[in-house]
Every structure is written in C-alpha cells, then in structure tokens.
Image 1 (cartoon, rainbow, N blue to C red):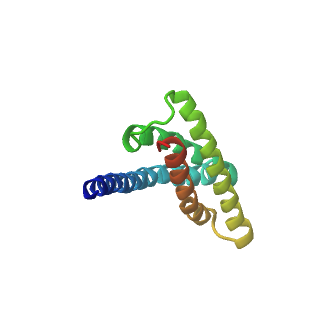
Image 2 (image 1 turned 45 degrees about the horizontal axis):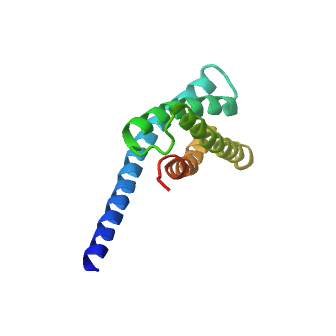
Image 3 (image 1 turned 135 degrees about the vertical axis):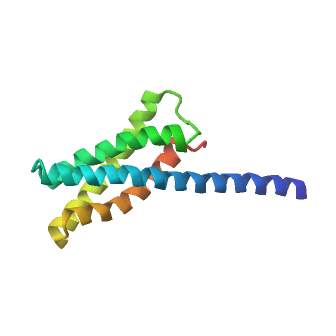
Length: 144
C-alpha cells in the first residue's frame, strides 16, 4: 500500500512540476509575444494612423501566430490532436475567444474609463494571458 501511494505521489509531483515548468516557459514566450504585440500596436496606431482597435487586432494576431509556433515546439510536448492543421484550427478558436476578451477590455478601458490605449492593452493582456494558457493547456495539451 505504501509503495502504491508513493508511486501516485511521484506521478502527481511530476505532473505538478511539468505544469509549473510549462507555465514558466509560457510566461517567457508570452512576454516575448506581448512585446511584439505592444510594439506593433504602438507603431500601427501612431505611425500609420490606424485606429487603436484595428491595430490591436492586427498586433494580437501577429503575436498569436508566433506564440503558436513557440508553444508547440518548446512548451507543450503532449499533443492531443495528431494532425497539426486540426490542432491549429482549435488553437485559432481559443485565440478568437482570447481576441474577443482582449478587444472588449481594451475598448472598455479606453472608452469608458478613459485610459490611454496602450495601458488598456497592457491590462487586457494580463486577463487574456490566463485564458490562453489555461484553454490551450486543457483543450490541446492534456491527456484526458
């Protein structure tokens, strides 16, 4: 009985450590992609004079494509969906929900609270980060 409990504990420890490692790596990748996202948002809005909401959508999607490739090659080793094009399709659905959350928050913070759109983007990014990581890990990279 002790031996069986020990094996279960070891397995849970590995799963817990793996999730922590994945979250840490996702934080690094997210930071890199967020930097790209924020830089593109600023340039598209100020240099090309595109409205901040449109710029935000373009910059978010650019960061998302880079995020997908970094996540699938560096962070998540478990693949629930065998075919990459199917996986990318589901990834895109999760991302679309994240984009909706992100855009709604940026717009709300900017239009109703009166924050500078870059600060709104930064605040929205914190919420979107947790949605994206949780949904991708649960739906795409966890064996059920």
